[in-house]
Length: 232
Ligand SMILES: [Zn+2]
Ligand SMILES: [Zn+2]
Figure 1 (cartoon, helix red, strand yellow):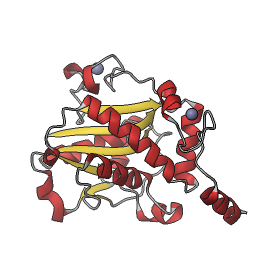
Figure 2 (cartoon, rainbow, N blue to C red):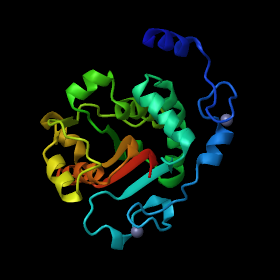
Figure 3 (cartoon, rainbow, N blue to C red):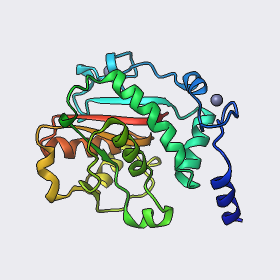
């Protein structure tokens, strides 16, 4: 049955999940209706120009900006992300990458592409084997193509598997995650004085983004920008 579904998905044309028009999984018109995140500070959710965190909100976090496309509570968005992530409809991420790129350009004075690198959130190899791919890696590839910014796929490593984080307390989450990520020594020079764009599908807790951002800042990164499809 799984194979039949897969073949059907491959030969069936793209259709908008919301209005059922062909050619896109989420057409521009429907995206505009779903896209209701005005530039805000991720910490306090208050308005903030170009998604910068407020100075007074950053005292215990290590990232500088979180650009979010839309709310995860939106049913159409949730279905799109689940199909892309778990059911091999990776093309959906290409549609999202197009919208993410637009929002990025709108909110970042992006004068010199050499000031930036793109990174994805690495997945532990057993989990990747099980799922077949890492959604953050797929999205990062598409965004790198569109922005013409280098994607350093092997720079960040996941050296430990972690349990589902969302049910644990903040303190335990931090403890679990701090040792889960490492920087590949071969690439450490690339981080010197650079702005990093981290691409992911969903932020469920702020812990992962904080732990990774801390690791990057400790290794010379100037600015950490998260670019994500959805958050609660
Ligand atoms: Zn539509
Ligand atoms: Zn704030």
